[in-house]
Image 1 (cartoon, helix red, strand yellow):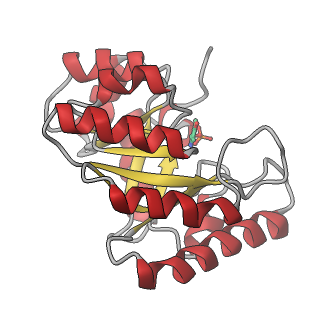
Image 2: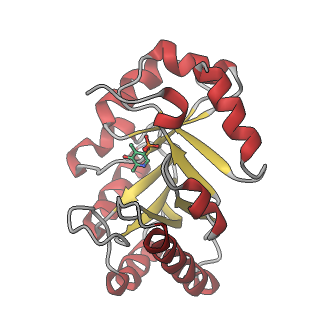
Length: 216
Ligand SMILES: *Cc1c(COP(=O)(O)O)cnc(C)c1O
C-alpha cells in the first residue's frame, strides 16, 4: 500500500475524535506530501532542525508536533510555529519554552513526558516530580501544559504495555481536576497504539505504519 492508502486505512481504523500524529522523522517532503494529500495535517518530528526545514518547505496549514527530546538551546528555532511539544521532561525546559514563546508573542502548548517504561534510557518525569513542574507551569504565562505523553517499554509483553498505559491514564485522571486545561493524553505508536487506545489515549504518534521502516 502507498503512504496515502496507509494513512486513510489507519484513520478509518481509529476513533474519529482521536488525533493521529503522523511521525515523519527521516522522511522526505515528497513522502510527507503523500500523507498530506490524503488529508493528514498533523505531523511529528523529533529533531528541531529537520522540523524547521520541513516547516519552511511545506504547506502552512500543517500542524507540527515536536515529539523528541528537546535541547533548550534549540527551542528558539521552533518557537515561531510549533503546535505542540510532547517531550517536556524537565522544569528548566518549561522556562525556556516560556521565554521563547513570549518573544514570539505566543502561548505554546506542551505535554509533560512521563517515564512509564521500565527501560532507564527513556526520558521523562517520574510521578513525584510532576507536581513541581505543574506548579512552575502555573506561574508561566506563555506555556500551557495541556496533558501528558508517555512511551511504553519496547517489549512483546502486551500485558506489561497495557499496565504502563493504564498507569499513565490513571495519573492523567488524578491530575485533571486541578488542571482544567488538560485535554491531551499522547500514548501509542505503530507497535502498540491499539493497546494505548484501549486504555484511553486520545492522541497516537504513528510513523512506520504509515511511512514504512525508517532508514537512518
Ligand atoms: C519515532 C517515534 C514514534 C513513532 O514510532 P513508530 O514505531 O514508527 O510508529 C512515536 N513517538 C516517538 C516519541 C518517537 O520518537
